[in-house]
Image 1 (cartoon, rainbow, N blue to C red):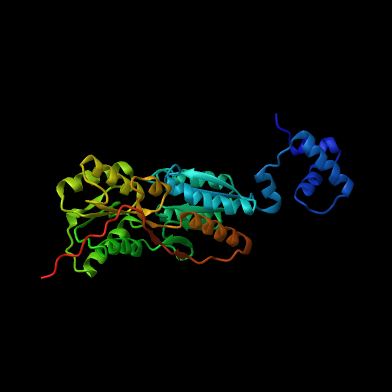
Image 2 (image 1 turned 120 degrees about the horizontal axis):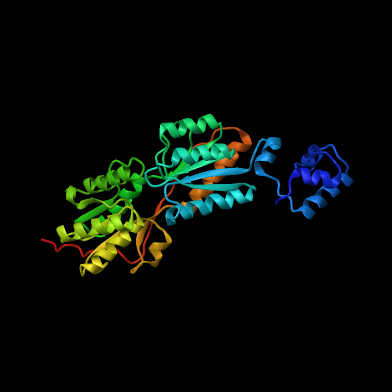
Length: 339
């Protein structure tokens, strides 16, 4: 059975309050008492409870993080950034997997409330009004990452998805492609689905390329969904010379579907992804993709949250830059012959 603060007090012969003051660096005891308390803590293997400490210093030094898919490479990179900064400031991180449809979000928010976390980072999903109401009732700061806030007092960190998709399409257009398809998420997804479709369509319009809605498929931001979408697309539209996939997993699915159908990448089909996950470097051939600074986004979210805790002041939202990482899945087409 683990030792308690009462065991430490009894061993030293002082009150529980004195042990608490020593452990929280508060005044009111001699150096000799401090030495005896710390020696007893070591001998008994006492581990102070974070919530018990919080009763004294008003903090538990814990941050709650909610992801729709903890196991994904996307979430992992963001989480590494969050944890690295949290550790620098002596905060622990509680990670909650809310599931893709967010059905466990309310359950986990209640858990974080019971754990008395000092603040919350919410990633990727839509911050529904009922979620925001729960966090407000907790009276803790909230920061969003890889998603956009619809509440003026909730800061967020993300890239400009619409512009990033525009740049991906334009990258292909400037390399001579005119028959370009897109595999994205659901159009109803206001965070990543809708803006990426909008950016793609706008790039085609700006370059005078006719929009063919049948060349835009929903792959659900997953490998399996991307594979099904790519097989439908490449079978129904063999004239397509390039595909923009709005997630790296779907882009790799396009490469897999193309190989199955005997279509060479990039000789016959060019592919651009989105995110720049480690998978992009590992694909065959290595994937050209739009890079989001995911780890840096996590670091910044953590810094903003801790700054809000320290100052009590609100934080500003930030749009971070994206860039295209050129690898080996895009081929420039030769210019058409002149008249």
